Image (cartoon, rainbow, N blue to C red; front, side, top):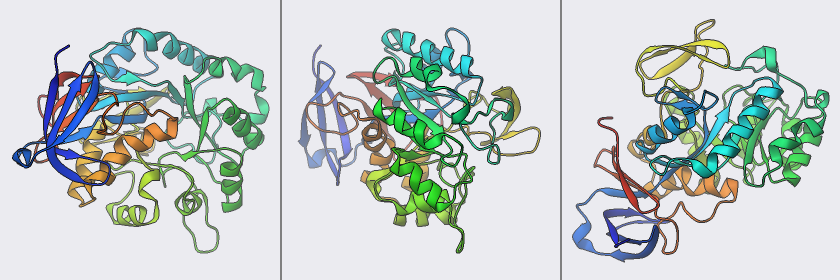
Length: 379
C-alpha cells in the first residue's frame, strides 16, 4: 500500500500541533510537524467505545448481521474500536451472546469498527438499582456457580468487562475470580456503601459503570459508590456526556476530581441510536426515543443513550476541556483499561486509526488501519 497522509491540527498526548501523519501499511510511519497545516481539520486518534449496546438500528444481541451493521454504523461516527455490550439477560442468553461475539471477531467487516471483545452489563446487579435493566433476569453471584460462567472467559481477550454490584452476595469472590482471568469488573447498578465500594475495587474491580447513574451517590453522611469512584485515583470511571445522564453543572466537578488518565467516555447507546424518534425494546423492555434521549415507556427512566462518542467529544470540546484530555478519554484511556496498546495515540509505530474532524468537531472522515472511510452525511 502506498503512503497515506492525514494533515491538520494533530491532537497529541499533551498538545495540539499542526502537521501531518504519514501512514504506511496500516500503521503510523511518522509524525511531521508543520505550521503550514495550522488551518486544517482536527486530527484525533480513533474513538473507542467499551460500553455500547447498539447503533443505527442494530442490536449487539440481535440476529445474524446485527454486529456487522452496528460496527459499520459506529465507524462512520469516528468509533474505530468497540466492545459490544449485552444487557441483563438469562445466563444462557449471555453465554450465547459471548460465543457469538467470539466467533464473529475474526470475520468482522474491515469497513466497520474493530471489535475488542464483549461486555456484560449484568446480570449481577442490585435489584434496588435496576435502571433500564430487566429485573426478571437479575441474579446474585452466590447463586450462579462459577463453572457456568467459565465458557465466557475461555478465550483470552474476549470477555473484557462486566458490571457487578459489589454489595451483592458472592460479588467479591466473583470479582476476584474474573480478575485472575483478566476480565475486568465495572462497579455499577449498585446501592453499595463507601466501604462496600472500596472492597469491590480492592477485590479487583477496575472501572465504574456510567458514573452517578443507577448507583449510590454523594452524601455528606453516607457516601456511596459514586463518591468512592471519584476519590480513588487508581480506578477508571465511565461517563456518558450526553447532557442527560449527568447535569452539566456536575461536569466540572467530575473533570476536576477524576485524574484525566482515568476518565473513560462511553455512549451506552442502544440500537435505536441514529434512527430518529421511535419505539423499540431493550432487554425485553419497551423504550421510546424523543429527540436526543431514550427512556423506558413504563416509567420514563433513562434507557441508555442515542449518541455515539463523536457527540460526547463535541460536547466536552465545546465545554472547554483541553483537546488532549478529551482525546485520551475517548481513545487512550479505554484502551488502557482493556490493556490494548497498539492504537489510540498519534505515535509512530501504532495502528493508524484516526478521525478527521471539522471546525465544530463534526466527523468528516475516519481512518481504520490506514484506510479512509466517509463520516456521517450530517451531524
